[in-house]
Amino acid sequence: LASVRIRPPLPRPVNIDCMAVNYMEDGTRDEPAPINAFHKSPSGIIGHEDTMVLQDIPATIFEGEAELAVIIGKRASNVSAAEAMDYVFGYTNFIDGSARGLQPPGSNFFFMMKSRETYAPLGPYLVTKDEIADPQKLQIKLSVNGEVKQNFNSDDMAHSITRCIEWASSIHTLEPGDILASGTNHRGLNAFQDGDVVELECEGLDVLRIHIQDDLKRVWSRETRLDRQEQGFNPPYAPQLSGKYTPE
Image (cartoon, rainbow, N blue to C red; front, side, top):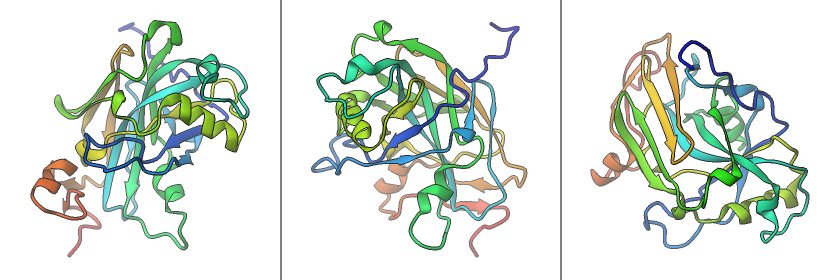
């Protein structure tokens, strides 16, 4: 494999549905948030060893969320939770890229934050359902330049994979090859910045590696959200330290 380039395993699915606030955050949430999701543009997909580009926009921070992605295997409409796993083909690593802090008109900030080019890295390949004994018991780790930032287990999900499929398929039909990203534990999120090498490994799915490019060479603090929370900062996003759009 060293002599070939691994392309994205799903270059253009019909739908990418991303579950929102779907983790209990290591017990720090008193109760599950209401089930919810947002749609992410398939044009943002990149693969293993590809580059996520931070655009020339006034985002307060660029982040990438480590997620287990569920791949739909056959058309699913109004599927029950009891039947949901029959519609799963397999799994892959998924990074939900975000440009936070933008101020769009109205309230549809997720569109501007989540659906940008290169903001949907996945791979390196698909792992079929039969190879994963229990997708609700997988360790998920994301590292930046070799330092582990996110480290959590899929057993911390607020709403199970089967419940998410049930709910999403009640909103719209899921097509074969569609991606259901199951959410993240936000406590380890940190600023992506130019030159970073990011690696995501959901247990049993091998390692997805991407590179970060920012032509503006902006710099943020390397603290995670958890680091900031423990210091009493609210909101807990790491501050930008230098470069274009740095707050005065």
